[in-house]
Amino acid sequence: MRICVLQSSYQGSESMLKGLDTDLPNPGAFTSQHTFENRFIRKDTAKEEIDSCVKEGFDFYLNFLWGTLDDDVAGYEASQYFESLGVPSAGIRSWERSRTKNDFYKEARKRGAPRVPGTDRFPLFVKPASGCASQMIDERSVCHDEGELREALRRINVRLYESRLNRGRSLGVPDVKAYADGFDPVSRSEDIVVQEYIPGKEYVVSVIELGDSAVALNPCIVKTKELSADEKFLTFDLKFDSETRFELIEKKDNPALYERLQTTALEAFKTGMFHGSHMGCDVDLRVRPDGEVFAIEVNPQPAAFLVNCNFQDLPIISSFPGGHQAVINVFIANYMLQNSRSIWSKVAATYDGLASEYDNLQLGTRMPQIVRGIVEKFDFQGNIFDLACGTGIFGRLLSECKPGSHRRAHTGSLVGFDISSMMVETCRSTGVYDAVYIDRMQTCLLNNPDYGDVDHIVCLSAIHFLSPEEFTFVLVLCFLMARKSITIGVDEIPDGYNETLQALGHHHMYSTNHIANMELFGEPRGWKLATRHREFAWKSFTTQHEVWTTYYRFEKVGNGDCGTKLLEAKRKV
Image 1 (cartoon, helix red, strand yellow):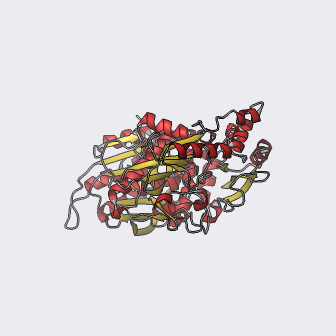
Image 2: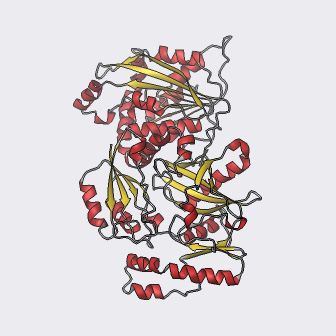
Image 3: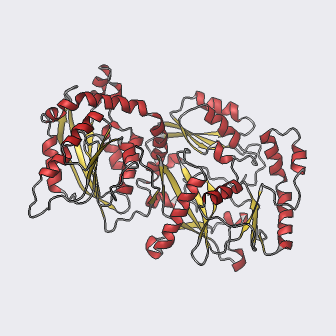
């Protein structure tokens, strides 16, 4: 894909970050699957510049316009206009940029999660309700009594004057000076956060949106230069200090804390209403000495895409299956999942028409022999999800596989998923599946019913229907959810196959050879590639092209903990 990256321009800006924020998100440095072009958007000319970008006809857009109502860089208003154009995109959204930290805290208290600091007991912490990078936070932001609080409020009200002018302009206030002058110089205004200071350590958890769900990655602890006991929080100067950095924590060192950090981050994702950005968020957390976790702030960009700096995306590198390359494809696939339903209904209708003869057609291929070899060779004890199960050839051959000296009869559940209602009906009639559901490969793992943990995921000769981005999305979910193994058959679809189908008017049956994408994905943390085997599999009865398939078998290593936590999605009936 040719992807446009919308970046906020500092041209004409007086932002505190101008001159400091010199490392720009660079997704092109992390993948060869797409090409990226930056377009810098000014706040005062955003509409014209965005129109120009859209006219260029990019395949997809990543929106990194971060400005709030209080900033003099492109953000809220520009994103609102960009969203109105309806082009394919993922990124920062206007509805999130319009919300302040106080809005987040109010919603958290209303929902009862995540836990956020109170507002009454000293010591109290004073900071702006909008903005990022610890702007206007210094050593005097912690107040121990009413006198210190009054002085901190006086200081921050003075420093917020320019922000209030910017906000007045953004809101279209007729007299912005009168608007900015109208704030009480020592009050707890809505644009100021006054909350209980949480002593302890600071952590960050990245949350990646996954369709109707999300995944919390490996938490990081924030490390800084040596500080006094009274200074253990990130000031503006400390945020940009060369010694400030993120370090991954290990679950084995404190499993309970690790889980609490991830659970709190997922609650913050829901409370912050980040679903629909197609990216996710970063959650800043504080942990008291007694282990209690508090959500402090939520930021709309879970992947910084920065090269050679202290704030590299360590959680994505270490714990997101497929790394940066995969996370970019997941952002795109999140959009596709909401906007490609008509294509899949046509594919389903095609297989509905084939269902009654499908097993007879399979007899003319090598699929029965291949599947029999797979079920005889590998262990499938436990709960199995069969993706794109068709008429149930995997389940039938698994049930026929007789126990021997090297294997036992299968115990556990077998659940199938397919998009064709007629294929599902045939599969159910075999009697060897515990349940069979009508669902897509991209969504069935998140919509899974109450069959407990998934031990094995199988997908044979079907994944070619997915785009490269959807292929990555499904692989990511497989590696996040399977507890023991993943067995996938990747068909080497020849170009002539697609050309013939298109000539026949079957555009919706377009297929992709994902061998290169599979190899690029690599071995995620906690997994090993046990087998890679290539053989002739089938000949298309429509186009007469021969198709070879490579079968990949991945198995968990040891306890195989990839360090992530998935947000439970409700099954859609």
